[in-house]
Amino acid sequence: MTLIKDRKEKIGLHVMKNENWKKPVYETNGLNVWYGTSHALKNIDLTINEKEVTAIIGPSGCGKSTYLKTLNRMVETARDVHISGNVTFMGNAILGKAMPVELLRSKVGMVFQKPNPFPKSIYENVAFGPRIHGIRNKVMLDVIVEDSLRKAALWDEVKDRLHKSAYGLSGGQQQRLCIARCLAIDPEVILMDEPTSALDPVSTHKVEELIATIKNDVTIAIVTHNMQQASRISDRTAFFLNGEIVECDRTSTLFSTPEDSRTNDYINGRFG
Image 1 (cartoon, rainbow, N blue to C red):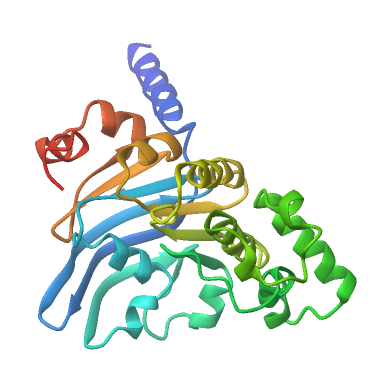
Image 2: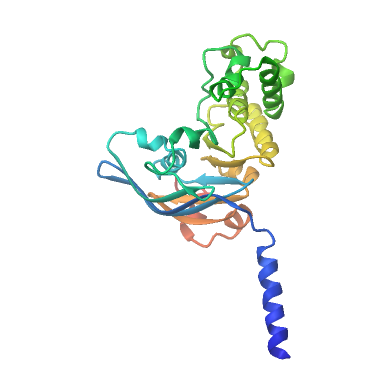
């Protein structure tokens, strides 16, 4: 009877520990990246979970952006790059010839440090992706454009000038337009590389509010130097240093009780 009781208690404990389990979207195992002889990423093991915001923090040159660009295979365009290890997306290997890069990027959007709208109208910026994927129906495109701009909290600001140049928008509006452009292809993941570093505080706040809203529909991985931003918007945080992961945990845990002294020193501004 005692053995049965103990086993039931262990099973119950196991279930409780896993009741918040989320489906992995990206899984990285033993990932190494070299630029020539420079070892940029060293044996990276990291999981990015479905419909969470994962923040990637660390000092300049620690491999954060290289890791992000590996997830959508942009890193492969760099000169003299060499990659080893495994990266899976939704359970499927993505490196090399394992998955067509066009297929991967149809499911994974990217937002860069500086807003990069196309030299087109606001409407055409958002409609560009759906058109590439074969949608030509004007009514359908209108619906996608409005829905994407609404999700990006931009519709009310631009609805009366959809056919004017995207370059007429402010920097913060342009960045939200770039996010709307990602949302228009209905991605599984959006990768964000320092998306607010070039923005003023008001625009930064709007982008952070947007991230909090869309994470219910899309998985987000964000590189940021801003510790306050990481603590505000992310569910999990990974700390990179010298091409390695020092620590990864729930954001609340990592910022309050980090296990590694280097993590504690970094988030408290002692270096970086």
